[in-house]
View 1 (cartoon, helix red, strand yellow):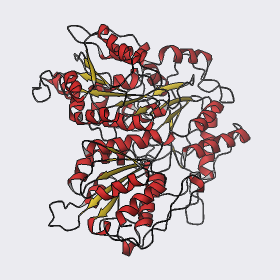
View 2: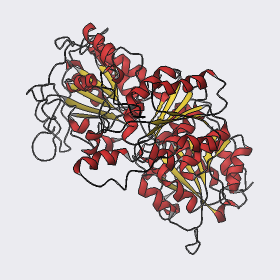
View 3: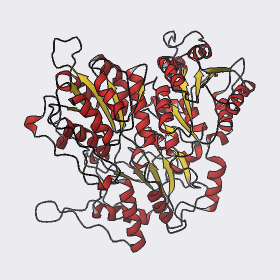
View 4: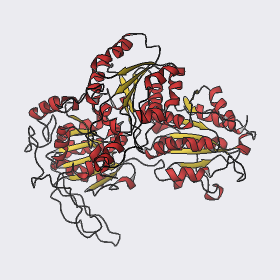
Length: 637
């Protein structure tokens, strides 16, 4: 057994079940080793597509993703997808062949590429350490939730392994799994690569500090209108967050990437931020405490800060200490796992009720106690912004007060069974008004074009509820994101951390393979669809019963609506009509062009049939104006 074969065997024994990639001479043997040991290999038509497939597979399947690429151009082709994964903290291993001779045509500093986009570069350095280094990369990806580039130098791949690696097993719970091997000493780490111990976010304690838990419990115990905003880091913590929310009467919202997490709850506000419905925006803005659980609370999720009322206290709970306060001033930051932190706060509130004592002063290291700082009215010191004054609480809502939404009961205290922000009247409003499809609009279809809202509402009614929706980037993306319902957080895959267009189709392929019991729906703009069109062959070859919806406005709609109103020429961002349905048929898809509601009868026919081939819906959508979220989005550019 050589090194390439050993790497494949170790990953298979650690529980890897699927890998994606494009095979060249450099990654031929390691890919075959994966297959030999039971790993399904999905061949993409472009490394960029393969990277995004692996990313989406990991996100929606709850597994470590694996990507296999050739040295040099194989890796550079994949870099947009790798960047998206790294920014999203997707647990992903990129197996990349590597040449180390600078005179080679294939040479590029692969470690520097990884570092530049936020991935962690590691390298297999010898036959003796290959198994341990592969295991180390896996643990970092899984437990540290990092995208890891594992470089496989060509001259090392072929070396014989003196002792074949013993099979590993991940059948035990993560908390009981054997720990990763000790990291290499700094002296043995190749230039440009890293030692595991030096990686921010490496596996470590996820238990929150008791003092921070007490401060959070005190703040929530005093809250009258609390709102939870759950992000990527909270996707496995629904039960714990709902139990805490029930005790204090909190409303429940998510960032876009966690959409669907609270589906079915009468207190689910859906997505906070630019996509938020008018009612969701009103209720979040009316909160007196906003807690971001594994959520950055960035400009997207907080609409440039306009969803934070002037009196609201802002809290973040995150495993990564560097994430706390990174996007806006916060009143309290808690480092810890979301589920563990929520459970600890619930336990403390259950035992202490609302009568929690203020947290003790923090020692300042001089033998005395540091001053607690100015009281914010909740017994929690205000966080300073570094300018000598208090951090701003957020913009005024125009009334000079936080604004209490109609239907809420601001005088109620939190407690088991409701109270806080919750009331029967508010539950009724949420049921009636919270979905975008329930917001009245003037249909702008006509002259051979369908309103994208009408299109998406009709598709929402037609498509089965058990679905997984993947959305590309562009002007159109708010419509499928907010007018198509999803069954839970695994039913929505939003590869938008890098804001690249062209990833949507590959995202849908990865999500479809991770959840074969659900109908995969890819929502694309015409620009993104044509960028990623090669992967239509992959969809057909794999026999995926997928629905691909192309919102075609014959241009890059975001740029059209951003620059057009100022009188700029749009020749560079608009294009002549393309028969995307005909292109899809050429790949082997079924296809229909939709210009009005009546054309959707063909979609119903496909759904009622055997679904032997994927269906592409070429929707000619009206593009008279930008989508509602676009103005908010461009404020950050």
